[in-house]
Image 1 (spheres, rainbow, N blue to C red):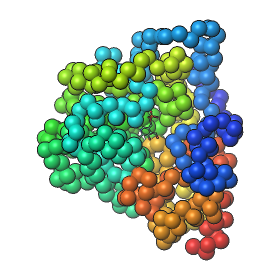
Image 2: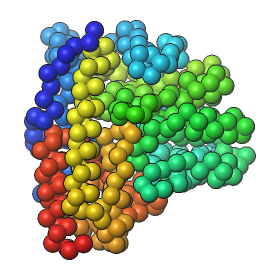
Image 3: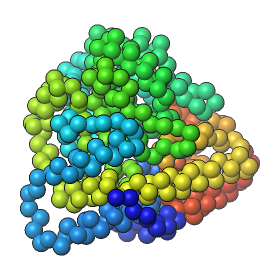
Image 4: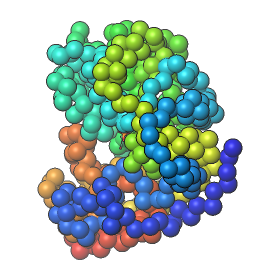
Length: 396
Ligand SMILES: Cc1ncc(COP(=O)(O)O)c(C=O)c1O
């Protein structure tokens, strides 16, 4: 059922007195409680009422004992992905996981041995690096190619970086932080290289529901049967419905041999069944969320357009390419001519904005900052005003 939501994305409660990471870590990360925090990838937008109502309903039963994950949980996501992305998952491929990052770590354990290599395309969401290094695997970085703020894959370098120890490739699709939604020919070509060198693909598709007009998310597993047989995909409602605090995601492994291999590590980890609130919240999101997500995308697009206009008009030394997907915008600040420390001082101290430094996504991110625009418009306006004041004061 699709409900007409009457969410006003411009109204959100203050998170200051909650344990919200985005706020709680301001002093530690930015040296001040005064910064406007627009870093970690969750939204300053209310979790939809149909998710909250499902949780409230569950609290009406006064026992919170062990629960099986109902089949309707998985079926809700299968239907959602079929409807939105035209790809059909099978129930027997799927596992519950409390977090996509946990799933990435488990896959590294399941599909590589100590001394093996894992390849990633940098700059990228930093747990892609730490999942590899924390498991004592060798990290291979294949930098994306940047052309005037737009990023493409470097296929030749990808292939030449592979050696006989390279067993796994971590694909970020859509890509955090550069906002690319990969095209079919890109995924196809990358996939062919992985097939040729017998590399397993782990596709992190957590951002795949937030895609802007003109782009289409293509599940890596849906590109061809040959790729389906070597692709493992992580999905989750955490980003789309702002419910990361419920710790719920899934992982799909179509290939039976890989599934069995993963199953052993999965069992040895014992995630159990997740939480009773996650079960109902997840199912409500995927059965009732379609209209809400479309409205959300429109709202975020408005924020992106607004920031883009303001930068062009008033702060031309900071540029951005509008993202094709995700609510994250990758700001090119190289035109400011500042060092890493200089950039931090300018954004954190002078502009009083708590953004993610580009460097935290790898050294290819030097000179960039990432801003999260999943907020009420007033927050973006406040951010622009703070930034503009600091920019003018510096006479850039
Ligand atoms: C690409 C990507 N994968 C995974 C995550 C985190 O997912 P989870 O909270 O399920 O571990 C994020 C959060 O920012 C992300 O950007």
